[in-house]
Image (cartoon, rainbow, N blue to C red; front, top):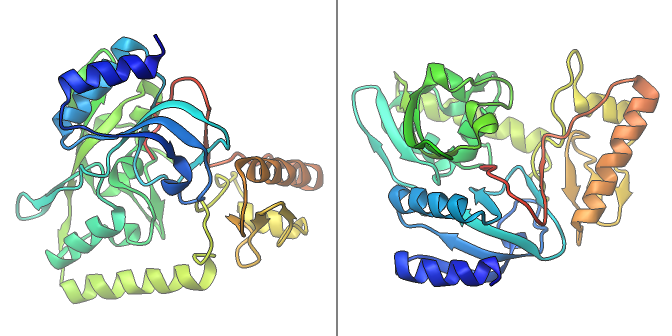
Length: 312
């Protein structure tokens, strides 16, 4: 029996209220707006249901992807032999104390930071323009403009293969540049808690507006992309190196190096995953040949078959 038939059988019995989509185009769920159909695409309605699904999928050995906003993700053009668990419905947020808030993995970073602003709690301003979900932000220790998740997180609750649901304090999350304990242990974030600083809401809003202005001015927000395409190489800036190599505006098919910011590969219209991968490879080769610096992609490629627990 194909794994997806087995999934249909078990999920109908164990999760009768689960939202299940068949052959769902991933282009609808990634900020690059590319990607073929996922064999099964599901939206659990609670953290408990999500954890139970993860446990079942792991027990059965189903090929798996945990998906948030799809903002740091590149999926193949063909059919994806995957069970995609989308966390979008895990989007609750609440103030839990004088300086604390708790939120579900599926909430967008923009909505999370806006909630904190209305509550007069500062520290999440940097996250307002990051186009990802909380789960992906914790997984990658997302950051911008001098701020990052590890500065404001107090704890995260996640599901781990073989370990079930665990709540980890921030000191145990191993948060570093684009890294966390979840990267190594293949865990899936369910919710997170924050310790913030009371501040005047108008001051917080002014800071968020300034960051938004800087993003609009410097980044190609008018085009689909996955944000910064490459990690920051030690001692350099990827965008500067790419521009110095004469690649600004270079295009393969529908994929293009942004003319606004060379650190971004954009979908300039009709791009395929193959176009984007070919352009990334060309950039890497050109930059290495001209500068000796090896660029490492920040964007994650999801295999069309196999297991992934990336939270994006």
